[in-house]
Image (cartoon, rainbow over all chains, first blue to last red; front, top):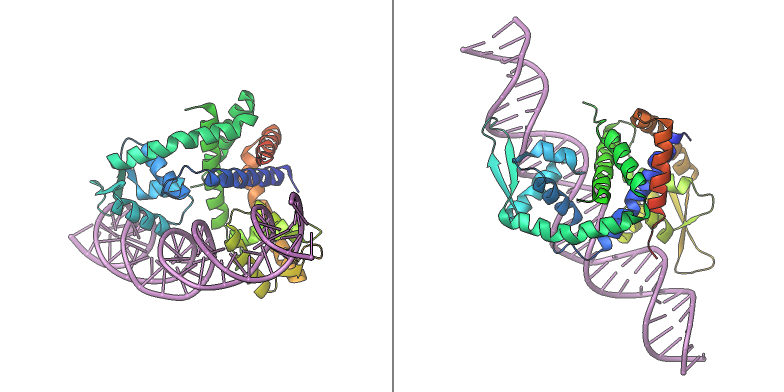
Length: 141
Length: 141
DNA sequence: CTGAGATTCATGCGTTTGCATCTACCTTAA
DNA sequence: TTAAGGTAGATGCAAACGCATGAATCTCAG
């Protein structure tokens, strides 16, 4: 077992433990964590996001994301509009209601995250962000 | 946005990117990654594992895990047997076939993991393992 | 300009998931 | 001993998922 494999296993385990903890928190209203993740990702982008771009951020298959967006549009939280430059494409943005809900849930969730990571020193937080940032960048073409 | 939140977001992103990469690798045979995860977790334990214990490691609801184990038992990869000390309980172990398949898939997957984490220095690998280990331990209460 | 191939997103369909709930068993206290 | 409450895992059911595929659009070599 290499160091790399040990590190990855440890990362997976931490992810599972924390996700379960967050999921158990009673802050999600009638959204799932996955739905919140979509709203959150959209909230960080000022310009409307392409489906394919969004799909890169979210751990969902393309069809599953397509349908989740359907539902979010039906619920009035997300807006689909045509991409001007590519008529196959779709651009997504939050509606005011969607932005509102994202913020409402984001606040207490952010507190949970802060609490869960409070076992780390500021230095460790910085290292963690740097290392995972490096990993995410790896997205082979 | 606190440092903790940035670090968590970065971790989530790295996890999503790497999981997608691994999932795209053609090494899974007719198992899903989640099923492999169960086999892998069982392979690491010499003594049969309790359902609830297994559930702690895997990012699945209890009913979903219960049914996945059903399927793995049907396919002859996992063995269910009664816990001698607690007649509600179940103990799980790999069958020889299950162990064989886990190894067969584990080999190339481990190489993928090593390759994906090869962008990190040995020091970074050690830091990552230490930090995520600390986080996983957090399992409140 | 055109046709072959790639890309973007949607849809059909069988499988898997989560929530709520159930049964069976264990634990504790009176 | 027994009744109340807790815990382990299974099951019904609607919702969501992934795979394969489809339709529309873009790209580019010839």
